[in-house]
Image 1 (cartoon, rainbow, N blue to C red):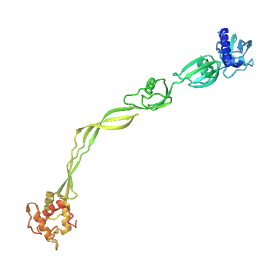
Image 2: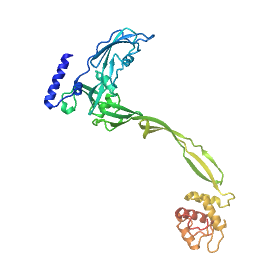
Image 3: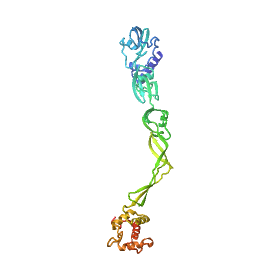
Image 4: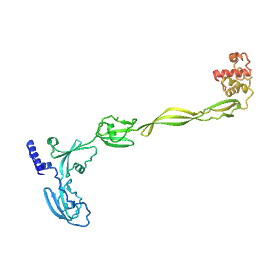
Length: 402
C-alpha cells in the first residue's frame, strides 16, 4: 500500500509542476484507487439469526478503525448503531445484508469514489465504492450487452479528459432492428455488413428471400432491416371442363316442344401452377401446364320451330329456310303479317310476301340457276324460295310487316 501511495504522490507533484496550480485534498482523493478489502472472518456467514446475541465487530472506515459489540441482526444495523453515515454508492465488505450471529466479524466501509465513464463517446462522472468494473457499472444502472467492450485504465491525458483518477470506456456495438418471421429483433454486432451481422446472430436468409436494405449494405447504428421470406412451389389442381350446348331446330316439332338428343358430360383437366409466396401470403400464381384427363361431351338439344296451327305452306317454308339458313319461324311470321297466308292477297303488292310486280320480276329472274325466272307472282313455291334466298342475302329489312 505504501508503494502505491508514493506513486500517487509523485504523480501529483508532476501534475502541479506542469499546470502551476494547487491540487486540493479532494483532487488528491480522486487519484486514490479503492483499497483492497481485508479478508472477512470465516464465521461471518449468512446464517439465520434465531436469538439476539452480541457480535464483536472490527469496523474500518475513513482511515479509522473501531471495535465494538452489537446485537444488530446484520452489517447495516451494526453500522447504523454507531451513527455512521453512508453515501448513496458506498459499499461494505461483507455486504450490508450479511447476518450477524455472534462471534467476531471484520467490516470495511468503502466510500464511493468518482470515476470517469466514457459510454460510447458520451462522458460523465459516476461514483462507486466497488473495485470491479462490472459491479461499478451495475451499481450505476449502466446496462451492458455481450457485444460491448470495456476498457479500465488510469487517466494519463488530464487535459483531454478534464479529469484525474480512473476511467472506464464502454464501446457499444452497432444496433440493428431486424423485422423477420413476424417479429422485430434487436441485435448488436461488430460485423461490417448487414448480412454478416444477421448471420452472426443466427438468422438464416434463403437464396430467394429478400432483404431491405440489401445484405451487402455496410452496417450503421440503428439501421432497420426487413427480411421477406420468399417461397416457390408447384401445385396441381383439377379443373372441371364444362360441356357445351348445341341447339338444333326441328321444323317438324311445334314451338315449345323439344328434347335432348345427347346428354352433356363435364370433362376434367389437371393444371400445374407455380406459386410464389411472401411471408406466407401468395403473391403470384402462374399456369405452367394443363393436361386433359377426360374430355367433355357436348349436349345436343332439339327445339321445335313449327308454329302451332301452321298452314299448308309451312313444309315449303321449312325446306326453303333450311336451304338458305334463315329462321323458318320468322319467315312464317312475315308471311302471315304481309298476306295472312293468302297467296292472292294484295292490290299493287301481291303474293304471300307482297312483292311489287317489278321487284318480283327482278328477284325471281336472279334466283340461282334461273329456276324461278318468269314464275307467276302468285306461285307459292316460287315466292317462298325466292324470299328465303333474298332474306339470306339482304335480311328482312325490305318487309315492313314482321
